[in-house]
Amino acid sequence: MNAARLDALARPTRQTAEVGQTLSIHRLNLFYGAQQALFDIDLELPAQRITAFIGASGCGKSSLLRCCNRLHELIDGCRMQGEIRLGERNIQQEDVTELRRRIGMVFQKPNPFPGSIWQNVAFGLRIAGIRRKRDLDEAVEQALQGAALWDEVKDRLHSPAFGLSGGQQQRLVIARAIAIEPQVLLLDEPCSALDPISTLKIEELMFELKSRFTLLIVTHNMQQAARVSDVTAFMHQGRVVEFSPTDTLFTRPAQQQTEDYITGRYG
Image (tube, rainbow, N blue to C red; front, side):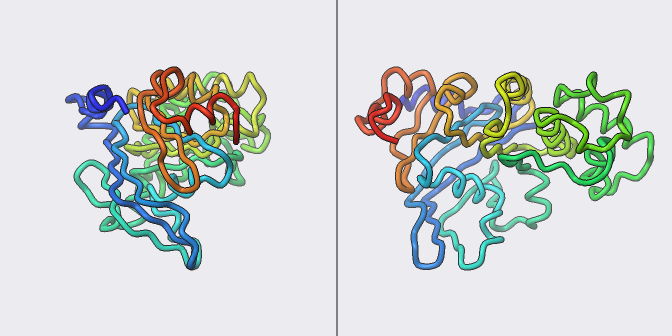
């Protein structure tokens, strides 16, 4: 691991302290019943950067991502040991509804709600207590602009969200997530169900979003991880094998196991 470069990435600027936050994971172990899925995870995920988790199916990438906003608690028999901190705050001690406002999630398949484009984006804003139509309209427009979707839908905001293409639906879901101004955005295989053109748009969007949010992405696509992320964690059988700046991990991996995976010897 290039510790000096990781430290530089993780060191927040004045702007970072006000928007995206560092996510710190300490001695994290995760169990599904008696079966252990994650082992002693220690990571410092830098603010306002894109961190990618790569590794073969079943290595624990998505499980780790879900721990970051306590979605694992929805699974019967699942329990976590260790600590995750968002900035200085221990997420286990947070109100879970407020936590999931601060740490948003985008899933593998687009999941717009029934209703219009406008209603989808306004959903979280209404839950947060925003009621004035003018305020909602402004926030919806800002979120759609932030998700690079406004120009495509501004004339049909009250049309059904399900009428959008798959790529547009995924950007709508991102707009819905960022409308409530989270500090961290979790993306679990956000492009796996999309065509190459839609994938490119999502990747371009991620570059823009990291100026405001801390992004964590799980991907099976190593080329995507190499293109979009600043730092990458390679995982194998529930453990982090290597964590370093992306260009270092893909060109000069420190571990033979990492090199074997990225060169296609297994996985």
